[in-house]
Image 1 (cartoon, rainbow, N blue to C red):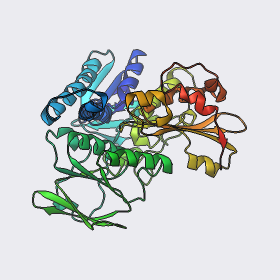
Image 2: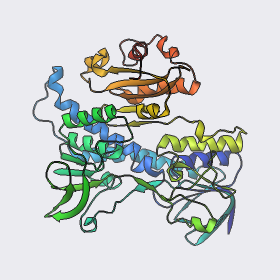
Image 3: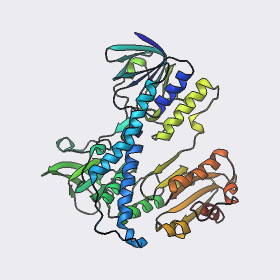
Image 4: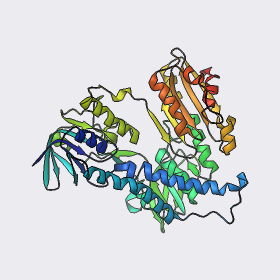
Length: 458
């Protein structure tokens, strides 16, 4: 049995960074990966999907060239094999760097294989057993496959499978109207596929406010994406070389036929086959590992980071998990995950940047609140760029004058939101932004204007 100071299971966003930090402190570290180094973000998530989105945007802008006075001879076509090759090249750079980086690192030993707990401090990897007093679980998550009658008899894709697609589906049916599904919907519509989103809820991305949901729907429908809401997806069956999804909807046909099916109905943690029961590590009813405010499990010496702990489903929350653990273990800095403010983006085009509470959450809290809102069509930079979809919205505590939350659906929303995030972390009043001099012409310069037009909740 090999002995280490630390064992890290998984090489997603938190794992390699933690390994490097602990190894630099002289700890003997083993890191285990059973499939692809880099985890979801590098291989099937952020980097490859945003590379595909970039290609889809070029096709979209090229088709609109005449609006800007630019003539492109002939129709705009998309070579999906080249699109995939570019995606593979960009993602491959990151994927290759991670194992090479770890192999060069002193005090770090990488293992390839499936890790399983034999006890609280012993891990089996293939034929080898490793032991350590401190073990960090960083195994990420995967696509959830729903119970849909007939699904076993048809071919379907998940977000991971989409990374291998090098052709243009004739009609892509996407079951799931949330973040992953919406990004693929717009992307493939821009590539040239017919796309239909099927969502069982009465609106898209139900965690967002109604106006945000409506704005996103308008953006997608204006580009030709069909959306079927209030749909119970009750069956799936073969239809020649394609697939038919049976629906129970308020309106529209009860059957929807397409060439390909993508399931995007959520994610689940990769904790089912780790042998957690042998270690005594507790999970919740969905399989997420229970952790405290500093990411420790119920077993001393075992932590859980990243998507598998249910405390965040983003690359940036996973990396923040690493920072919290490192601060507590190495810096005597008692950071807590409850100190962070929820922030994320939806990478349709234009994107949605989100931070803090929604309008619905603020209303439920009963706070005395001010609200500001400005349409992107009222912003000069958006008009100049010919991208006027969406709006900005901000919520302010009327007593403390601190920012409670914001949504920026529009050009640059994923970047602009950070000026608001920083003020929220500083716990400064909104007047810091309102009184700041911003650069013209930008979208950000209208945030002070919006803050100068705050109104009480109706």
